[in-house]
Structures are given as structure tokens and as C-alpha cells.
Amino acid sequence: MTSDENDRGGLHRLIYASRFTGPAQGFDEVLRAIIAKSIQSNRLDDVTGLLMAGEGRFLQLLEGPAKRVEAIYDRIAADPRHADLVRIYGGPAERRLFRDWNMGQHRLGAADHALLAEVGLNGFNPSALDAQAAETLLIAAGGRHRR
Image (tube, rainbow, N blue to C red):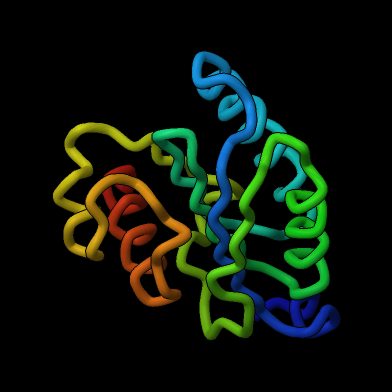
């Protein structure tokens, strides 16, 4: 844990799910904009994580100093592009799961249906997941992008 994390309440992890409010044809463009802004902002805030997106839904894990992670979540909750926000987990974390990514992304594809089935989903409905299943899904999705 960095001294900055100690100063701000320790390492914190937050997982949430939400639904995209815009038209389906605008989803990819919005996703690109969210990722670009997140990478820039999170680098400054010492926040890392992964955003999984597909079927008009988001599943995101954020980790870093507690106050900063919670501030990001508050901004997301106020963002009109998100609806049906469900906080799946928010609390302390022993270590970062995505320490190398200010914001990694995984766009859900046909090859991911087996991953979804492993956590009990038939289709991408992340708000139905508990914290352990959401974390498992995000780690597996992130593992597809690691070298």
C-alpha cells in the first residue's frame, strides 16, 4: 500500500454494475470516451481497474485510495449515461487486482458466454452478481488481455 493510500483511508475496492441509457448504436462511442477519460483521470488519482461492457451494460471494478474511488463512484452515479446503478461491493482490499491498468477494458464478445456461464449468467446481466462472482468474472476477463 502506498503512503498516499494510507493517507486516504487505505486501499479500497468498489464494484458496480449499470445500464447504458443511450441508443444501442452509440454504445461503442461512449465506451471509447469513458475509457479515454478514465485512463487520464485515474492515472492522476492513483486508481486502477477494469471496465467490462456489453449488451448495453457495464461492470466495473475500481481500486485505489478510498476517498478517490468513492468520488469516482459518485460522479458515475450522477452521470446521465448510467442508469440502474447497483453497488455490488465497496470496501477494503488487501492488494490491487489490476495494478498495471489505470483502466483496462473488456468488450463482451461471443467467446465470453462460457465465462458468463461460469458465474451463473445467461447473458450479460452483471447487476445479478454477488461480489465474489463479479470479481471472478472481471479477473477472468482481464486475464484475456494480459501478456
